[in-house]
Amino acid sequence: MNLEKVHRVYLLGIGGIGMSALARYFRFQGKRVEGYDRTETDLTRELEEEGIDVHYEADLKYVPPFNDLDNTLVIYTPAIPESNIELQFFRKTGTAMYKRSQILGIIAAESQCVAISGTHGKTSVTTMTAHLLHQSSIDCTSFMGGISRNYHTNLILPEKETNVIVAEADEFDRSFLRLFPQRAVITSIDPDHLDIYGDYSHLLDAFKNFIGQVNKGGEVLYKKGLPIETSWNEEAIFYSYSIKGKADFYGTNIRVEEGAYHFDLFTPFGEFSDLHLAYPGLMNVENAVAACGLALLSGVTGDEVRKALATYQGVVRRFDIRFRGNETVYIDDYAHHPKELEATILSVRDMFPDRKVTGIFQPHLYSRTRDMAEDFATSLSLLDELILLDIYPAREEPIPGVDSRLIFEKVTIKDKILCSKEDLPKVVENLSSGILLTLGAGDIDQWVEPIVEVLRRKEHV
Image: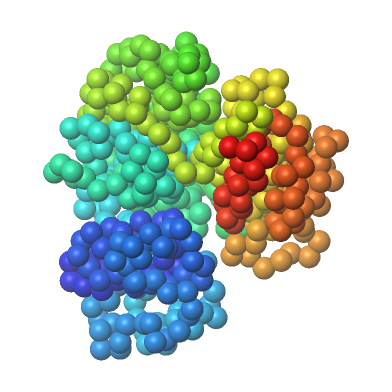
């Protein structure tokens, strides 16, 4: 695929976080960009404001004319059902269609790629790394899996001449195997997406293959303790990172001062004392160590790292403090894996000791719920109170016998209820003061603003 010859880009599932970044990229390149998504969201409305045509009803009147298909790049997401009339049109006409990961791989192949992978933590590390590079003399283009609070977008465009691309490397559907990076980070390899991989060994094999694709002389930065072997790529240089003991890059002397984290960073490039991270959550200190490591390996100076890290504002839906009142603090987070839930809840307890912590959790995928019900229950039992919603199906059909009760019945805390989304405002209205969390990767984010409104009314803010 020669992207220079394309003058029109059509995206099926344009409202997805990865798809919308591609839409913005091609719009910046001067292409005509349009697409379909079944749901209107803040993100799709922003795309429309940026000059991208988006429609919400699958209809052949919107697809490019047949005589223009040769100059049209069609990108689709696997979340689009085969029954979609537009998808069927492209299949019947023999139009070449590409997955998002294929196009990202083509774009990244033309540059020095910095790829961030892991079953959790990759969006935060990607966004941090992109910010550190963008604020330095190196600069970058970055495709992120979340909306940066610094830039209010999921696509960072360079302001200086650069050949560096920072990309979130998603293990779902083996998408990250489309990338051949110069530098790669692996934040975690926990069991996930077993509907795709079947078992953990096949997931581990995919990460092994990803690491094997790092360029000769490139670098692999991985969280210390992961089951990674240097023999997976004998032509790359391996570095570890940690906040729990020494590693090649490690943070120590971690403390909270005036509401922000401070820590010392030890690296092969020397020691950097008293780095400042205003974004909350202890896991974000660990993410910062990874991001700083990648930035230093990419040629960013220590002074540039220090200055940029202090201005990092975080990611929407990643430990995202949405309301601070006299009685309640409300945090929204994308956590949808047991390890992510555990990290978020423990970080909240670290920040707000002795406060009651209530979590509203929406399980994501029937298969993930079935495979990890016990682990979900263990993590959610770290809460003081649980409000458990129905499963968000995403791309899946229901599985007989699989619903939220699989988790609910295993949760050991006494204060727990099953709740519909429609009843959430009323339930929140009756909550006692403390720390409130919304957790999940489905459509629970559509209820963030209604919850904020309820809390404002309660506290008359």
